[in-house]
Length: 116
Length: 112
Image (cartoon, rainbow over the protein chains, first blue to last red):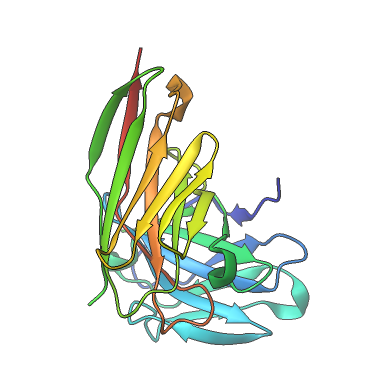
């Protein structure tokens, strides 16, 4: 079936550095999402993105976070600067229609971020 | 606040069935989804319900009771490969674009 690819699968960085997590969504999808999962906890919504704009974001989407999808390439999540509490697995997802009409989001396998 | 609760673990015998429960309390309700997730892999969509009752999708069936804030995922004729984490996710009425509130997942172990 359709796949969402995430790069890197794992990244270790020092606190205060910048990190960019990349997502290659399903090719004809229009809606894009980032979720954050701390080990042992539930996935939590960060942000959704459509037509080049952030549509909704949660309180977890701090000022240090940004998303973009320049010219239909990767959908990226940038964190600058990183903090220890940013250590988590970040899941990217995409959907053709709004995810609410069918509930179906296509998820990537996650990018595990470790901030030291 | 938004709360989606699931039991942490469930164990069932191969060839029988397993029922994964989910209770939720959200600001309105606009659909509930179930996902399967194997460790280190992407969550995979299984089912979506928005109306009360039982929705039969073969190996998986899903029940919803909106008045009780309750859903379950029923897996029948269990196979060892059904061992995975099952995630319940609820969309509240205030979200336009599929903002889901996830439970922490139920780890199902199917034993021979």
